[in-house]
Length: 124
Image 1 (tube, rainbow, N blue to C red):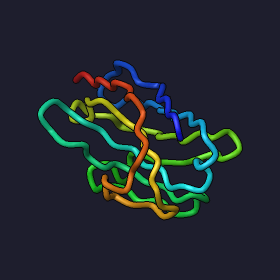
Image 2 (image 1 turned 90 degrees about the vertical axis):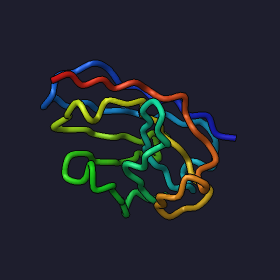
Image 3 (image 1 turned 180 degrees about the vertical axis):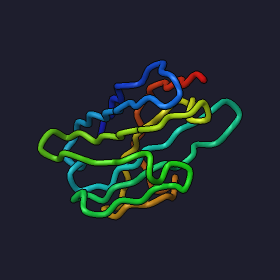
Image 4 (image 1 turned 60 degrees about the vertical axis):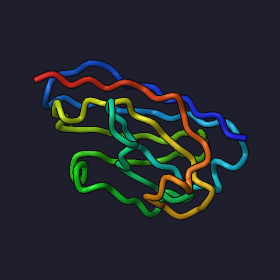
């Protein structure tokens, strides 16, 4: 079992930055890929970024490429999402998730464990 706790969300102005953290418990964390997703009311989870188990390979959705950076510290069982140049369109509930595979993936069905989410609100 893996438990995930996101933190770092909040209310910011357009152009600001935030750093989200995802703290994990459980032994499989260091063997698994991790992803960040977000959801807005009425929409499905949107893949944002993924990182493989070693942190050497990352993948980004076009909507955040160049603005967001995913990283992980396996010694701390933590994954981060650095978000820069935020816009009101980034307002959403942000989730981290641990996959059943070691490689980064955009496929939601491969993610077995999800956190409760942290809210990000960006005002213009």
